[in-house]
Length: 150
Image 1 (spheres, helix red, strand yellow):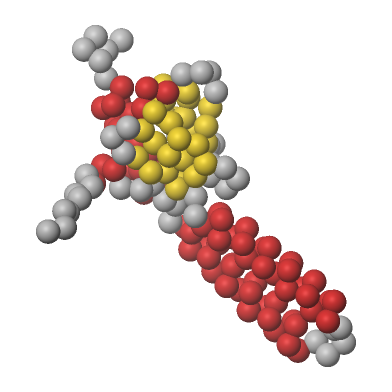
Image 2 (cartoon, rainbow, N blue to C red):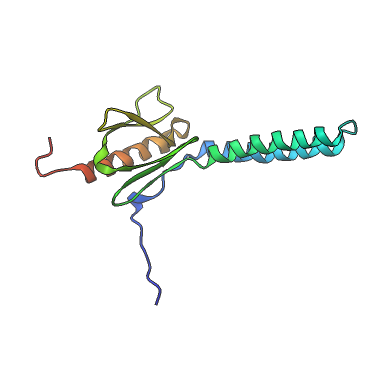
């Protein structure tokens, strides 16, 4: 009999809303416009057509990568996938969660003195982003609390 894994709602994946919609729509638009350019410009030779196709695919690929930013929490830590790279953090590595005014996305202060942006929670999402930042801060607090929480 298959086992059913239940994921706590506090461990839901952190993803932006507005950025995902906009960048996926942009990817589709770029691909459609690129196809139209290639199909309806009679003066393009094969090299030009290939050049347009490559550029269109690169732009669409960038948009899809932007739409895929996220942060995944589990019992052991947080995996942050940003635009360029991904990083796995243990809960003990995260000192604090910041999302003050002027920040485009959540920023983590790390135990090694470094900071890490979490592009999966973006200011453009307004109140939803604020709630997600609080949820992440709560997870950090729950997993880093000690008996002598100083």
